[in-house]
Length: 387
Image 1 (tube, one colour):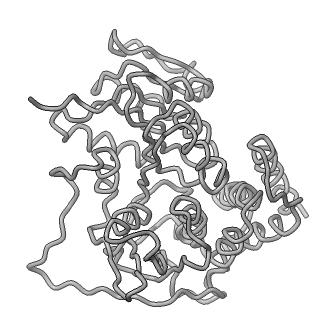
Image 2: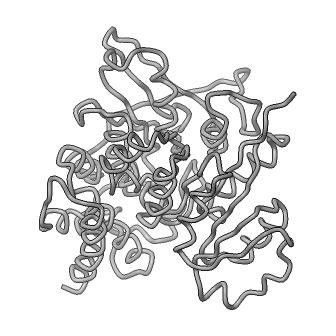
């Protein structure tokens, strides 16, 4: 007799991770079932997903977009909920087994927190939950008996490689980075990067915010912070290497010198499926490596002068406390300003650094204080731009 299907709630089903998750569910032959979906502005896509997958609930968090859309084609069994407050509701549904947290940015913390509060397994694609909430999120998971399974390809790779030895045998974790489209640019070239150029990632297909983060390497800075809390590492145990092919997704080096790596094509469907079906490995739809063809893997150390975001990530991982919330809030606001052509590409990281250095640091903030500092950091970026 086949085991019962796992019921999945997807927070952010209309984004790139959410759409890939639905592809994995569709190919699972009934082993996975989407029972709740949420989307923001793409309400027509959210409705079409509901028509195909027939969840019990969908949440349209953008009230204005929802009010202007005709949802009359929704399946009879699908309930429409409107407003961000319903994210917590679907994350805590009794029938949900796994919550896929894929809302972009600090906005995703609400759903992650609610799912952990309900003792759910969280497949975490929203790195900002740990960048902002860090030890508070980890402590909540421990207290509620919840589990966090990483979906980011780098952290999924570390999670898999850590199964090769004991935790006290780990010397360090090596996060790989493609280097983005500007890994060989001079400072002068970086000063003239356009929005269109920044959105043209050489290996990954992602949303605009994450694509810009990859180009500045702020994405890797945030991943350093996430890894620090997720795997209970000292900041000194985390390093980054540039790997343009994006085949080796990360590595774990053990104290005897052995290095365990996870390799696969750059396809997010693989780490998504691994998180949803864990601890089992199943046949999947992600593209496989072709071992009958020549394959070259290159690694090189990162240039901290060309990409100062990496130094900020290490600094924040060491500082802890309120630093992650401020860096993340400042970066989200700075990236938005760049996409709106209000600042240059080369100004994103300096703006974040200035706001981080001027913030009222707290070593043991509450969740309310972190959310307040997130808002403060965004306002400071606006002031930085106008000054």
